[in-house]
Image (cartoon, rainbow, N blue to C red; front, top):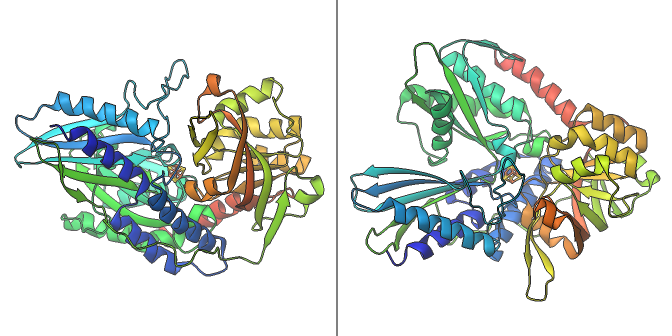
Length: 504
Ligand code: SF4
């Protein structure tokens, strides 16, 4: 199997950088549905540009390259230990080359292992089959959407949909509820993998397995096919839209499978995958390890974006940081901000730290970016940003308002929005929350013109460190303003009302 390592490295690199053919088609169709001049339309255009840039630069589509999960079928007699070792080596090499972000963290010490290896990373499932070739499927599902997975135990009483019983109607209600609870936090519009039944463990596993299906296939089980189609026909009417901005497209795909269950249990497990649905596969010669064909990949994909410009909404404002209170107070929910100048990244570790310590830099008037970038150091020791989209902001809800007050931060950039405590903090100090387009890691990396410093690299690791960036033309939407308005709260409430009607 002399070519095994190279084949695996190609699979990992392509999965991280080249969106599958079926997903591209689904996203393209979605793009035609959003009204020109809306934030959702603008966001979908940025997503399309980003997909093209990732393919061209052979760089990660999204900076969160997720939990690498392999599903492997081997003919009887193939040595699975050899394949497992080769996968680990290929994962480490892809991380060294900046195709994967170091994403594996010791859950006890909090230390990043550095090369995406460690207990439980990567995830590898083997199964034997009666075919002659080896098949390896890989999905890279990021943390933002993984956090929106949900499991229901029926019967249940659920917000907006009411009683969900142990039947297909109950399952339908769970799925609608799952979409609603995700809002834009999993980088909508998303894809669902659903498993009816199993136990708590096999249910989640079965839900994720559904994400290995072709996004455009038809379920061979007529009851499940009908359920998939019913969900697809109704989900968009929730109006959650791209990134939860409100809009015509909320769900891009729904795949449902079923496992037998214990008489006493009835679980419905839902795996939510963001639009950056990175899943490819290869067939391999079992003797040489050479790739015989690709699965889900378009060898020469057409460009996703129709043109290189960004459609405007007519509500654009341009600022250079540091920002003043007057700059920020004029902004209203729905405005689009184009930022220039310095910006600092900060995620979970930094927020926890700042609450009880001083900041290593002056954050007065600063822009704080919830982002864990992919970074590479060149031979001269200079850091370069390889991918830098926003991370899910709600995790910082316990800290954000205190940090706004303590340091005078004027703008927080992230995705998915924040809660009431932060909204009150924004109002009190005169600051805004800006929603960048989740997953648009190449698009935003291009807006970062320089890396001027870094703090806490040793202590927190690359994704959690505080990176000092210079930006030009960094675009994001005001979704929480300094006047007490939150687009996220509005969309959640409105989509909840629509869900009430749908579930009747
Ligand atoms: S697109 Fe969003 S949810 Fe998906 S991996 Fe990237 S940041 Fe996470």
